[in-house]
Image (cartoon, rainbow over all chains, first blue to last red; front, side, top):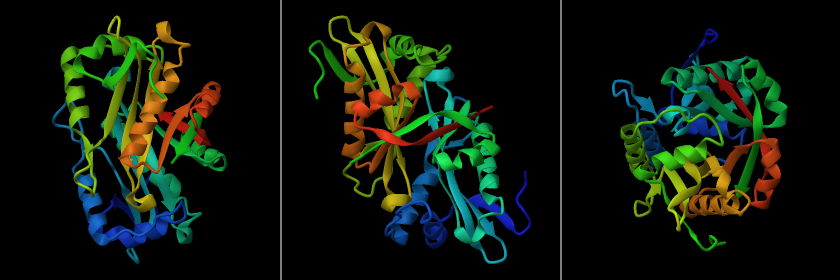
Length: 159
Length: 159
């Protein structure tokens, strides 16, 4: 499935700080992040790779993506897929989709599903045997439309 | 909470391949893993670090632990906590507990809870603002005893 006219998708960059922060606020607290710290984060995300026995195939640990409105160069949506190397499933790879957010001005245009499709494609291209995510009960139907099914309960502990 | 007499906990090592594989079989398919591949995995897990602005504090990306029976040097339980660096919560850290397994011969001795307590301690010592895990409905009560609470639904997609 391709993006609607007027949008493109790319990896997150240093210059996205302000707009990504704005977009992520629909999810939770973001807080104050300096351009310097964000630049270090992007550098770390761009350098962290996952060990792969096939050395020709580079697997990025973090895959932070943004969907951008071409007309205004505005970030319309963002999400990440983190790749984990396990022992089970013959040293298998598991993808963790995290921090999906669609800017309130761009909701209802199907961008969320397109973002998920792209992140799933990234994970399966790397060879993940499964991709998981945690969501609120109210979003289960949306993720079912994206091809996901209920797999269990998310539990958390906070300090 | 400390381990019962006769057990100790340590980071997983190369030599644990056979026993860890045996322990993980209670969870799912492990498949065939050569000592050479496992050695590469352990090396990767021991070298992968998470970017931290406080450079004096090294944060390990993967923290694979084993509880060992001192008498027989047998792996009684294993589990991992993977550390993710996010944007939200001021470039916060989230811990992901994965692949918890207690060897069938050692079940019913409280080792599972001690393992979870240790992994939670590791995550909070690194500064995680939250630690999450996914489990079957039937294990919710166990994780509640470990201090966790229900946070949402786990969704998955497989190739």
